[in-house]
Each structure stands twice: as structure tokens, then as C-alpha cells.
Length: 182
Image (cartoon, rainbow, N blue to C red; front, side, top):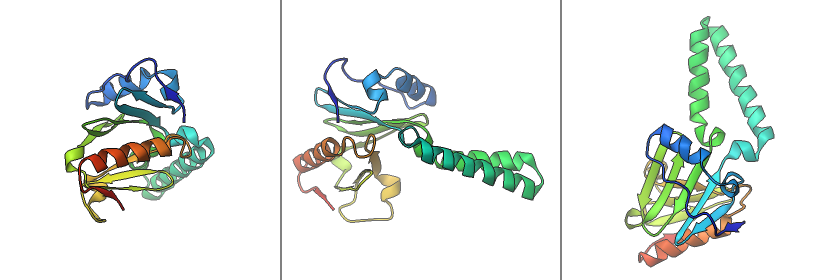
């Protein structure tokens, strides 16, 4: 984990994809490398699994192309193959496109090329940390709704900033009262 103190916070992005693309393009060299940036009370970093694991990205891209081509041939229509390609690629958007994360005093935010998702600390009740990221949840116990109402924060690199992210989430949730890790 690399901590950078200069430069201040990354530019804010609106919820549109153009703003998110501009925010990703305007990030400092440290953030592009996946470094964790502490700007005052906020912790900001970027995760881009496809760039961090290029071999796996190539295998997944080839599989998507093969499946799309095969489906287009099976259905006898290249347009349907193109639709299959779009659906498969978009279903793996968190893998193929970079996501910028921010933990601050008011909540957590994930900004990608498709928009921003934010959860305030006041609605979050628990978190689960694993090898690839932290899931913050509005539920005290495990629920199938977590994937819709919670927020997944991926670490930069192979758990490169795990300790900083888990500590920031645990500290903020502990400050809110009876909130805990599961």
C-alpha cells in the first residue's frame, strides 16, 4: 500500500458515464497505479481487476468472443451474436472497467464508467471482509438482498490496500454504535 499526501482528493464525478470517464482520466499517476490516497479524512483508491490480472482478462475476453460468435452462428444471425457479446461484456463490467472508491466521514462511494453508488454510514450495519474486498451491508445478518442494497469495495491489486480499507470501514461503523463485522 502506498500512501500519497500531495494532490488532494480526486475530482468528483457526477452520476453520468461521461463524468465518471472524465474522473478516471483525470486521476493522478498514483491512483492509476491502484495506490491508496489519503486526502484528509477520506480514503480513495482505484481497482481495475482486468488491468491487475491481464492474463485472466485475455482468457475471459476470448471466452466472451467465442461464446458470442458461437451463439451468433447457432442462431444464424450476427446481430444476436453482437447482443450476446454486449450482455456478456456488461455482466462483467466490474472486471473489465476501472472503479474508483472513496471512504469518507459520511459514507462509502463506488464510481465506475456507468455511474456512482453511495451508501451513507447511517444506513450501514455490518461488513464482511474477504481476500478480494469488503462488502458493506445495511443488514446486521447475512441476507440475499446484500448484493442489491450493500456495496462491494474491491481492494487495489492483490489485496494491496486491504488493511487500510478494512480499518477505515471498521472504524467508521464502530463509531456509529452497534455495527460489526460478520
